[in-house]
Length: 113
Image (tube, rainbow, N blue to C red; front, top):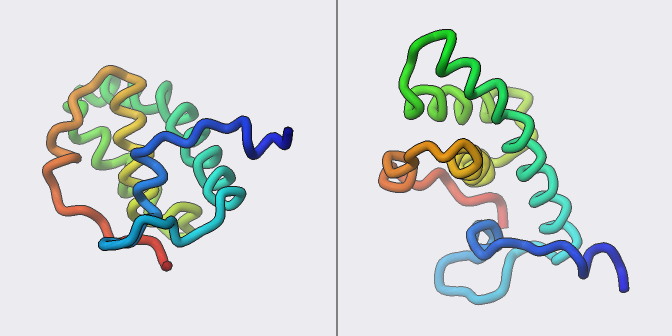
């Protein structure tokens, strides 16, 4: 069994690559698994930095998450806008921070299909 088949891809992540009105992702499983691992690693790496930002700067969790998303999208960006949004939602989940404002705000543009 290959490593690709052992990686669990959450539905929230795979949905990023399913164009509206379609059921099949726009990229292959291997590429999606690589993108997922990158995004999951970014979310985990940002946990300590985000918690420190919130504590030392005395800003709200919402502001920290917005700043993290802006940082992820700064050039040269390694993630697409929808991946950046997924990363900050995952970051909020890891830190047990509210993410309602992220989920309610406008969805970033879809990755290139």
